Image 1 (cartoon, rainbow, N blue to C red):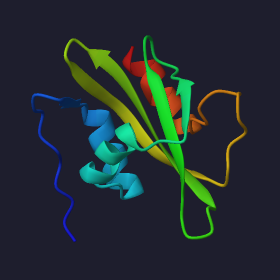
Image 2 (image 1 turned 30 degrees about the horizontal axis):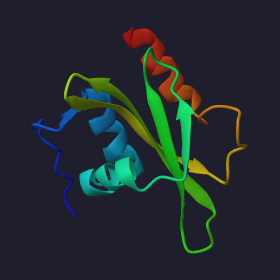
Image 3 (image 1 turned 120 degrees about the vertical axis):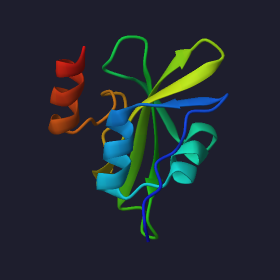
Image 4 (image 1 turned 90 degrees about the vertical axis):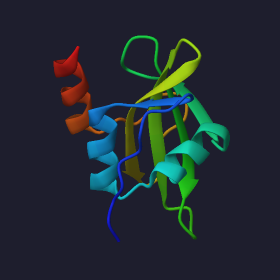
Length: 108
């Protein structure tokens, strides 16, 4: 199945970073959009004024998917998305992989 990059619209702004990560982690745009309303955890993101949302995935609940976004006027700017293997500890912030953390720090 071919990955189709989402287009910016009246609700969402998709960064180049999130499009690359969605392709890498095999996350569809619809899956990321659903996470905006159907999440289990909310944490503070690492970038300025961002929020991270996550939920468990898999039939045995053995992993999580996460996204980080930033309110941008009346729209939402999707910054990043990733899969986390296993279940992350609660109240310790979003479990952001080191490669994503470095890429976001270099982009600021």
